[in-house]
Image (tube, rainbow, N blue to C red; front, side, top):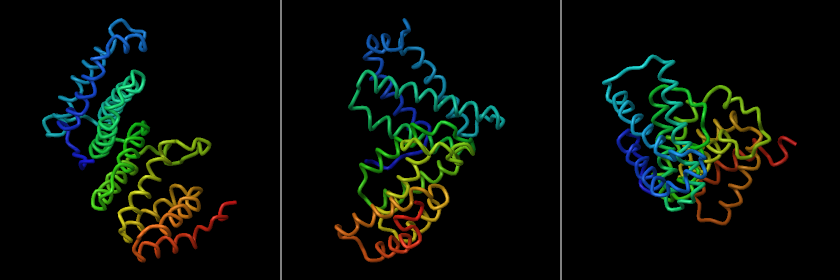
Length: 242
């Protein structure tokens, strides 16, 4: 995949591409939404959102923190609604675009200084992108972008109290940060990321590290990378939290 570009006009173009695909299936979308107007109101809302976002990005407009928070949450909600329609009308060739759109918007929101309450689309987007990325430099960059989003996540998300859901966004994005760091083959980045994961996902560390070490054993992985895995496996053995 191409590197993510965290700029409003690029994100707007991604959203436009997806919106046009949804509008092309307006009849199906109208039935799913149970709304005679179909996706047109959503398309208009997105068309209104991005010019304001552009003004905020360029410094041409300013919002107080409370209003900025509401605006960013509204933008993520619009993308949620768009992604829902993509899934429901089965526009399979736009899934990668949706992933890039959501991941980029999550970072954009974080860079505006807003707190992220709705992390699901961004976490899933990064998961798809990490899975499709093999270049070590790109994986290193993705790890940094995910860290920006993780740092911007709300206190409620960071408390991670609902551990019964294996697909909860907080877990998904942190595990993918760990995967990206490991596959970057950068021992220093791995150490930094594993330290953070140890605080954020302690219950997942034994399984994550054991799985990573198993894969490293059968792959041509530098010894320095294996050394980091061994170091943290000693700290988090498989039976550590049982």
